[in-house]
Length: 398
Image (tube, rainbow, N blue to C red; front, side, top):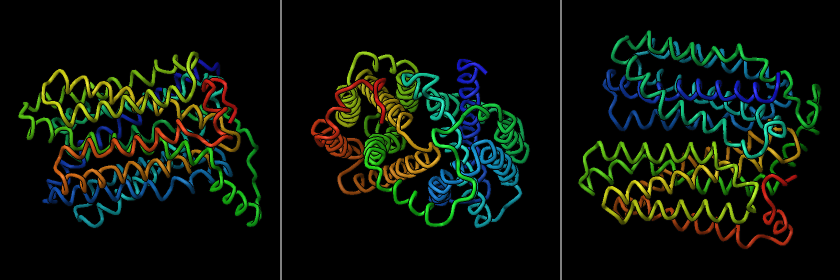
């Protein structure tokens, strides 16, 4: 399969998986409310599902490198689809929560596998396309999924709706040719004694470039997860706009995020990593400040666009750097998404604490210091990292 067709296959799988996630985001609260679950209970369920994902991210990376992406992807797709189909069979909140925890774990394993396979072929696709699978996921989750979910919720019962979602999740297991040529940079070891495996784990935890890239991503993605939660409350309850305005702002942020990952990679050819990081963090900070301090609709939309474009650029940069790192992509992807997933989970918690202490405006302005610290780390790197940051991402070897 040619690199172009292979890239299109990755995009199709990402869009379909994102669509399933978008439908789940709509169906889950509705189904939980039908079981008389409180809003706080719904939030707890979603939080536990997120935590379930954190439990499989790093172990999944080791499984991918040991058994191969094809096997892990097929098994995770199949079982995740079955779990989703069974969700409406449970009317007990405790059983439902347990299944959502399991679904979160299997869902993260699927995405870790997809990203591992994609990063192993990134040299064929080009590093300027590093964010394309993430952008495709966002298209499915933020645009297509909610529309499909609304139709399913209106036309079908919860049982049939979840069966359709489960089928969508399980279907990409048929796309196994995605992984047939995705040879890892280091051949997988089939029979490892315990000590080498422990040594590999220690080496992974001591990978400073990986930790730095993951922490830079976490600094940006934590503000994004909080932004999506509190922007509606800020725009409607504090600024006094109609809900339609909040919808436009969220849509503007999502469109800018997707566009920056599909086309922002072209900036890689002309600019250094330091300049790209600086631009992405500054755009995020400007977007947060505009949302926190301005009340006019045009400025709020402009802030959303700036924040979305900065977030997308940051993701593209870090995915490109991750794809160019030497080593087995399963382990690298597993640790990367464990760290960034923790940032996603902690972002709303930090935002909620800021809201409780200083009001809802702080849910946006309170992330600016975190972004400032990340920017300082980029502008004032260690001597050994200064040369790497001065180069374009297209010329990164590690």
